[in-house]
Every structure is written in structure tokens, then in C-alpha cells.
Length: 448
Ligand code: GDP
Ligand code: MG
Image (cartoon, rainbow, N blue to C red):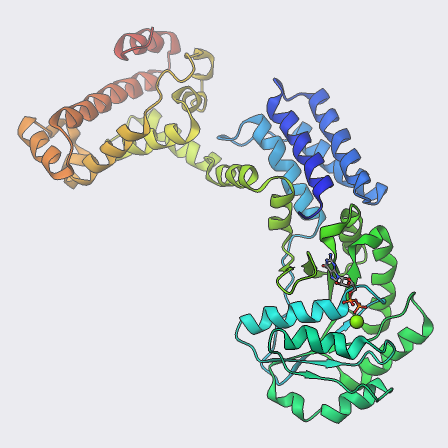
């Protein structure tokens, strides 16, 4: 699993939040310290970590949780959002133009994973219906052409190599005409043990003669923060269009490599997660952070954050409440949002003056199956019945029950609920919470 350690530490930290009783400054401080520890042990640059956690802290202490999200959920959401923006919000993609071929050259130090990555990228584009070929321009390592050949032949991708020729550019020129048959040409180049003038010079020559459309720098994640320097030097000399961070599967330093790319303003396009051709993923910070923090939990929370009632919705509801305009459709909407938010008492908190009523928690929860039945019932009502539910007499109720596959009792219960809610709304309009409370308690079954 990618960045096992870092992910585990962050998940533990968030679990602590979930298990705490209060969200207060001391919890936020503890959370921030835990995140700092996790990131620094994941080799992320200390000043970056401080910057990130400062933002988390500021937001956590100053932002109100939106209605529908608890304070804890809001806090977890802040951590998530800040981690995503820390890694760069956008998804960086290589836009393959329809020229033939679209040339992608891979550069990077010796052993960074260029040749392996070419196999993976070839597989990636072949699966997407493009005609791909590879050309081997690593003339420094004797075994290099054969390695590329094996990698590409295994996935039936044509490969152009010349084991005798020692001039990289000449190999390219020899096959130049052939390349026009392909949508994508992947160009493998030589690396060196370190960033040397010789390497840079060679890449510059290839760059100016071949004019690749994409220049991908392959960085091995295990170099951690050193990725920054490499990204900067390669960028200066061959104008890197994207980065592949390889070997993220086997290192504790991945956090350093990923964040270093952000500092070097080098957009990460792919990440390598193993030695096999399938072990490549497009890099998408949102998905990446979700997985880091524990996919299922975080996704459910984000869904909830999206659905949470906006202030505008709440205001609309409030206006209707106060004006006493209310029909069956409004009732259903109200029930549905109560259901979404968990309890009626929360809904009441949004109405001015109602917050102090201190209703018993969940006293008025509507069960989901009841809501479902009500929805069927509403679908079987005519427009005039929806707008004037008072006119639904027994024979109409029978007809509606039949049409909706419910019982007459269900229909009557819905009407009863409607009448009670309407009464309550009228009282709210009167603006006297104590009077309201008295009547309200009497009027609602099961509420004492
Ligand atoms: P090059 O010198 O840049 O062409 O690097 P290679 O493609 O030859 O890769 C060097 C070594 O790293 C090989 O043993 C690869 O199998 C390995 N390697 C490359 N990418 C990954 C990866 O994403 N994960 C793991 N675990 N190993 C990788
Ligand atoms: Mg190689």
C-alpha cells in the first residue's frame, strides 16, 4: 500500500478526533501536533509541514461547522481539504494531441525507473485505444535496449532499438519515418548516477532535435526531499512538462518526494506503485488523500459535506415556516431534510428563538421506511391534493392508498402529521416559544 506509515499515522490521528468528546483548542492542538509528527516522519519538509498545519489550525479554530456537519466531521474535512490543496488541487494530465506521433520523452537519473515506466505508460495508452511504440535511446547501459525490448514486447508494443549504435540521436533519426504510424511514441533515454553536466548536455541535444511534445521526469520516491533539487535542475534544462514519481510502494519517504514536486512546481502526472506494467496510476490529489486517510470513511464524510444544508436552503425553510405557507410537498421536504440531518431538534435550531427549546434529542426522528411510504403516497396525490391536503377525505385516501401501494392508515397518518406540523408552524409565527412549547408537547405524541 502507498505510503503505509504516513497513512496509518494520519488515520490514527483522525480516529482520535472521532473518539474525543469535545472539539476544543486542546484537541485541535493535539491534532496539529500529530499531523506534524506524521508528515515529518514521512520526510516532508519541516517548513512545509508548519505552513500546512498552521492553516489547519486557523481554520479549525475560526470556522463554524456548516449545518449538517458536526464539529468533528468539519475538523476532519478541514484536514482533508488542506492535505489535498497541499498536494496541488488539479489533476494533471498529458493531453495527447492528434498528431502522429505525439512524442513523450522520459528523463531522469539512472535507476529512477524510466524504462519500467515506459512499459507502464505504453500499457496505459494501449488500453485506451492508442497505437503506441517505444524507442530506446539509452546508449550508455549495454543491457538497456534489451530491457526496453522485453518490457514492450510483453505487451505487444513495437519497439525500436539499435544495440550497436552509440549515438542516441542517430538511432532516433534512423527510425524517424516509421514513427509516423503511431499515435504515441515513448522515448527512453539514458541516466547517470548523479546530475552531471554530461547528462544534461545529452538531454538538451535530444530535446532540441527531437522536440518531444511531452517531457516526463521520472523521480524515484525513495530520494525523498532530494526530489526538489532534481526537479528544479531538469526543469531548467529541458522544460519538464510533468513528473512520474516511481517506487511509491516501497518507501517511507514518499511524502517528501510528493511535496518536493509541489515546491519545484513540477506537476505530478503519474505515480508508480510497483514493478509490473499495471502498477501505474494517474495522480489525482483528491483520490490520493482519500486513500491515505482511509477511503471509505472519508468518502462518506465528503458526500455528507456536499449534501449538508446550505444557509440559503435553511433561510428558505425559515421564511416558509414564519409565513405559515406550507403544503404536503413542503412537509415531505422537511421530513427528508430532518432525516438527512439526523433530528428535528437540529432543524428547529435554525429557526430563530427555537434553539433554546432544548428538545429531547431525536425525539422526532422519522424512520426511513416511513419516509419512503410517504414519498409513494405523495406521488399518487393530484396537484390540488398536494396543495390542499385538507380536502383529502376517506374515499380520496382510499384511492391514494391503492395507487401508491400503501394502506389507508398510512395516508391518514401522513395527513395527521401534516396537520400537526401546520399547527406548529402557525404557532412559530406567533413568536412565543414558551406558549409554543406547551402546545407542541401536548400535540406531538411521545414527547413529554
Ligand atoms: P531506469 O534506469 O531509470 O530506466 O530504471 P529502471 O526502469 O531500469 O528501474 C530500476 C529499478 O527500479 C528496476 O529494478 C525496476 O523494477 C524498479 N522499479 C521501477 N519502478 C518501480 C516502482 O514503481 N516500484 C518498484 N517497487 N520498483 C520499481
Ligand atoms: Mg533504463
